[in-house]
Length: 276
Image 1 (cartoon, rainbow, N blue to C red):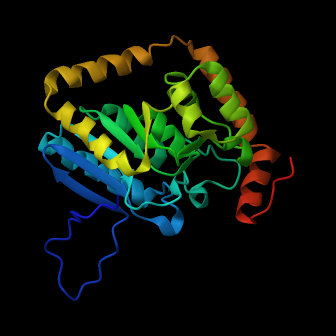
Image 2: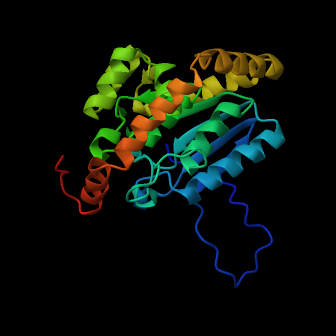
């Protein structure tokens, strides 16, 4: 299942110049782009550098007229992604998920890409990576997959946009369960409640995912792009007045300025259970 053909974009670099190992493997063939997380030393955490490479990949695929993009892990590991790089979160008194946060930029890049983005999932998905899954247009996973959104473990107040990503895909009672408990949703249950489109055997995951992408690539790109945009806009067509938005932001501010967030981040860094 490991990705082999890669495009690292290091053309023109002098032989004696050291090049940092890319954090994302990039492949483009038959109008299908592939972006594979390749930083398992950090469990494919969604740090600023990795996200910058993913967004650059999207821009490259857009210029090439890609008909579909597949997000995956480069290896057959136990963790698909551990989520937002906690080392990059503020320690206290600052909004941990502002509009310009790299993760927020990545989610917007997935939504705005003019062709379907398909998540191919082997292994567990945590935190912000679970939000990424919710943002992808299709999710194909195998029986090793599991999904957890974990701000309650960190004392982190999730943002309104993130909640809407979940509510657009999953019934409200499941969203509440995921955010209240921070427990994993198993592969079979994820299929039942709509987190994923289908669960397939691990041995078939790559073939099935690329088969779906190839089918999409044979359809009208203009029609598919229009459908994606219409569904995206309609899915986010939730009326909220400015006063209500400010109220929700105030609730979040009370949390990230409070003691729970400080303790949650400190406990994570110290590798111990938080004491709330």
